[in-house]
Length: 334
Image (tube, one colour):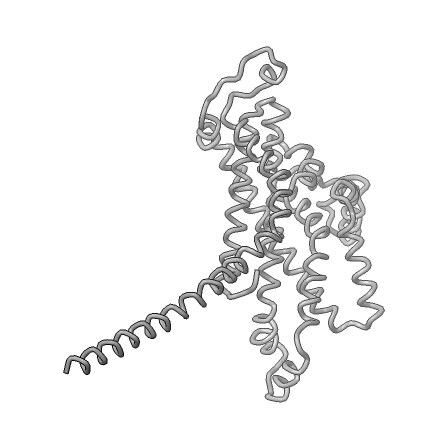
């Protein structure tokens, strides 16, 4: 019995050792896997590191300085060194939020940017759909003319637009008067607030729609013709195909051009400043960029102008985060 018991005990001990060895094998095999997975997860960051360094060098320090200046009473006396810097904390932001003019300018900016975005998308998308139905040489001419408008500098385009809408020599006023609209004889498009905004918006749309045209046209060309032909064979009309097939496929592209158009139009400066002579009569056509320029350089309130710059940067970052969230929600690859 003793020998049998000892034999069983030896057998059980050997089995336990073997089980321990078997249990250890997966653990030792998992370690290299975890390490390799950790290296793979860090690998993209190594590739992105040079870009991050460049972005921090080019954007990080200016943004830090912008925030830093916005916390001081920074005027021409401080710039010249005749007066010491005075830390005021959030006083510049409090002044802006308590100023009714700031909220009026912010409302102008939102309405103006929104109108420009909607009009740019409508014109660009309509021309992109039209381009798919044109002959090759007509489509080429359309793209050449559109890219010419896109390549025109904002200053040059604004000067040309002002000449076309000049009260006395402008071609637009003369054409309107020639068809019987005599009220436009000597009419100033920049005198009234909304006609001035409309004039600037037309120039902005003229410069911006080619980007939407080219991008949306490329998206339409990427849609498989087999899918559209199959829908036609099933009896779907062209409006139904556009609504149920083409628009869902073009949704990522439409989101991209929309967000980029919002960012571009939110930062408009040259067109407003040139065409309304610095913001219109009594500042009726001011937007945030022009308002910040006036506060920082015309009034030498650099701290207040920096606070406006921080607010604009924060708003644009919020728009960008919304854009990334929409992409993530729709499952699109960033």
